[in-house]
Amino acid sequence: MARTRTQSKSTPETKAPAKPRTAAKAKADTKADTKAKTNGNGAATTAKPRRTSKPKAAPIGHEQIAAKAYEIWESKGRPLGTDEQNWQEAEAALAPR
Image (tube, rainbow, N blue to C red; front, side, top):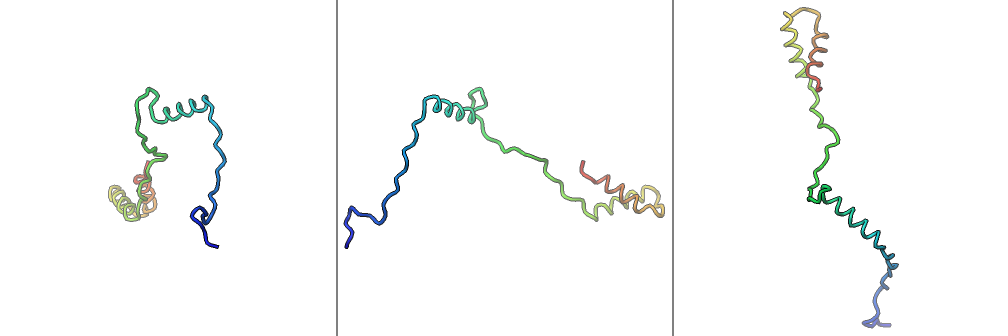
């Protein structure tokens, strides 16, 4: 059987009718929309992205610590046996605060 012009391949789905909005609900929605777009004084605002945490600094590299430890060692007069102490001081000096 051939299809006629009024017949379609599939029947359209029907949507349930929307619930009627009350006047109070419509007014509340309008106020919420206005608050979101203004700063409370009625002046328009632009949304700015919020930074949730500080940007992380790049990790301190081995070469940086070694150079700082060498500076510390030289400033102390090149004493023997202070390499670990100098390294720890260099790490503390270069650590982000």
